[in-house]
Length: 164
Image 1 (cartoon, rainbow, N blue to C red):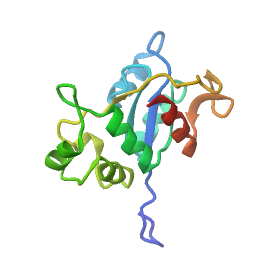
Image 2 (image 1 turned 45 degrees about the vertical axis):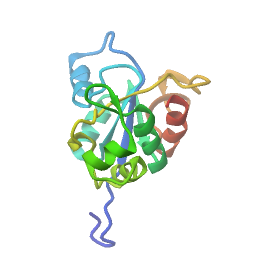
Image 3 (image 1 turned 90 degrees about the horizontal axis):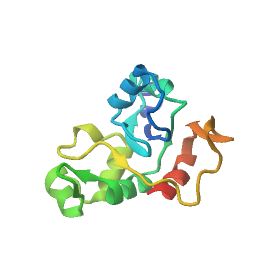
C-alpha cells in the first residue's frame, strides 16, 4: 500500500507459458509447477509480490507476462475457465459458488486483487489457450519487443485476444 495516496501499487499479472518442457532444468520445471503452468500455451493470474516476481524472473526465457485489463480477464474466464470435473463456467455458477454477480464482476475483482484465483473453490487456476491466430509477431526465442518472451506490460491484452 502506498503511504502517500493510500492506494495499492500491486498489479495482477497474466503469465503465459510459450515454450515447452524439453531440455529445461528441474528448477525451472518446479517454478512452472508452482505456477500451475505445466504445458505450453497455458496461462494463469498472479499478483505482484516478491516471491512471485522471483519465480517470474526465473522463467522469463520461457514465458511472457504483463498486466491484463478486466475485460480480457473476464473473457479469459468465460471462454477458457473450467471448474473441477471439466465443467464450463456460467454466470449462474459464479453467483452460487463464488458470490459474484457475473463473470464480468469476477474478472474485475480478480484484476483489482479483491479476489485470489487460487482461493476460489473448484475453479481451475490455469487456462489452456490456443496458439495465437495469425501467429506470433516475433520469435519465441527472443525477448519482447523483437521476440515474444519476457515482460510486455499492457500489450499482453493483444496477445491474449489472439489466443483465447
